[in-house]
Length: 264
Image 1 (cartoon, one colour):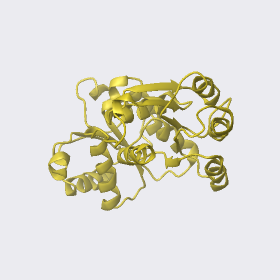
Image 2 (cartoon, one colour):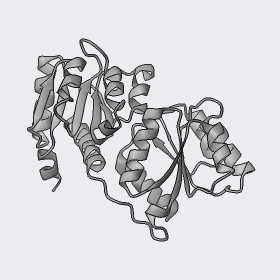
Image 3 (cartoon, one colour):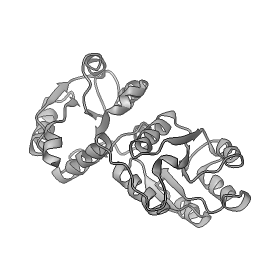
Image 4 (spheres, one colour):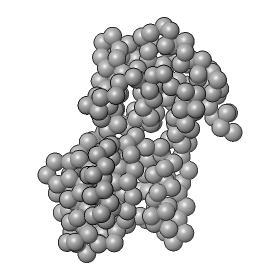
């Protein structure tokens, strides 16, 4: 079944290096994917998107006319683009360059060189994203859940909303930062809060502390989705009472499993 789904995928491969294109295409072929359109630049990709909608866009970080960050931001300006999965392949390790990719909703960030197993995992996440399964909760109808998403990145809010919507969650409220979220929490009841860590006004740690000590919703499940790597800061969040922490980029199946565990 998985092989059939992979073989049906249409992929845009944005890679200026002829050698790298050959290597990546061979890995894709080994996974069962043959329908691959190769593109050299960001501009060529954006032009091609006017006529074709791939299931998955795989891009290098550094293109002749822009970066992978520029490309994904240009693509994600259109809400319909969230129907496509985005995968970055790069040897870049600087968090300053990778963070915007994570915020824009990449399925995965693969290193150069990557292994077939790493690609297979990313492609499995792609299938979860493209063909979502509605979550099944023992005591709740998923469609009735009230969920608050807190993130200062518009791209990230849209991406997480898309993931939650695909598993059957219909009632989603958005907040730009912890301060706005705290005001909403004092006025409305939520079954689940999904928050980022690093935000202006009030960050994720401060928000968790305020919820656990100064609201009528002290026991609401809080899922933190973050690219924060500082273990001391993450430990402080866990101590404050966050229910679970999920890394960005995350596998769609992971957030579904966590929600089922938190709410069942």
